[in-house]
Length: 386
Image 1: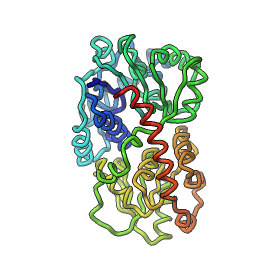
Image 2: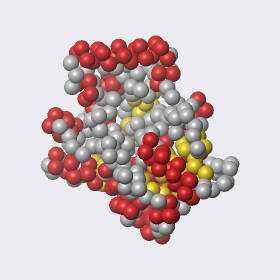
Image 3: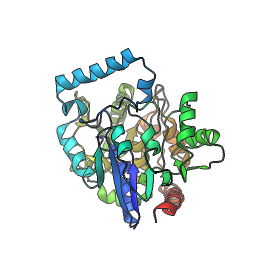
Image 4: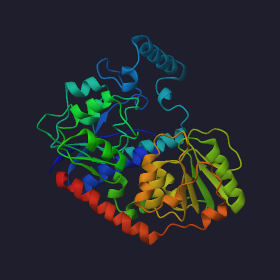
């Protein structure tokens, strides 16, 4: 039985991050491997995180010593004012946090590494190391990227990436040079977006970078449907999941509810003001899945909101990319793959409910494409985990 370690974004009160981490872990577990997620702490995710002086995120590397100190002092004051734990969950509803904690408890974790220095001083030992999905290679992240390129693992270790994401359209020369240093030791590299595949193929001469689907596609659609908790109130509704808390998308959703005569349900963990809609702040991952699966129409600016609208066979859904959203390529890639590019709302949000309701996704086409994407993705991964 192979022992496998996954490094990914985890311990986050974020539906997409939690479900993608669970999906990769669960699929590998189902294949008979001994698997765990490497519990590397991150700023803004773990209250006991210790910032390394050597391993810094790009956002701190680019700043002067005075500016770095300013950021750290600001963070310290925030923690003093709100308390150590609250500073890392500010704005999130306690009931939702508890549901995320219960959900994440199903995942086996390695021993905790409270700093990047700690994982280099005493790295975990596995037969296979996997860089997981999500935007682990996005230079704008608040955490240091280097350990997510598995540079702490032994030189002769088997290392692969599965559906890793860069999340932006271009890299600086410094970032390109770092990627060139960190990636050649991988036995196989796969990314989630076609854009990332193109970027890395240009950087890595002699390496073939593969494109695979988000790890949530590794599990069968029925698996997710069984996990979804059906809402208690079965009155027809439109669901809005605004990850970016976009006010224009909210106004659009309110208009859609008015035009359709249906109830509007808004899932927004950080929104405090209720309006002409039902505000849900306490949904855990399984409740969130149920709300998507049973909606008459899903409106979202979230990548994983779009993913699960596809996986759960939502009656109808539309995605939105705000003009200021620099990470929208992953949504357009996904919609293009499933021949659903006409389910992207215009930036002006001028559509009527009648227009949306007259364009229902073909379940047959989605099912066929899903099977192809799942098979391709499983073939890539199975080669290294079985």
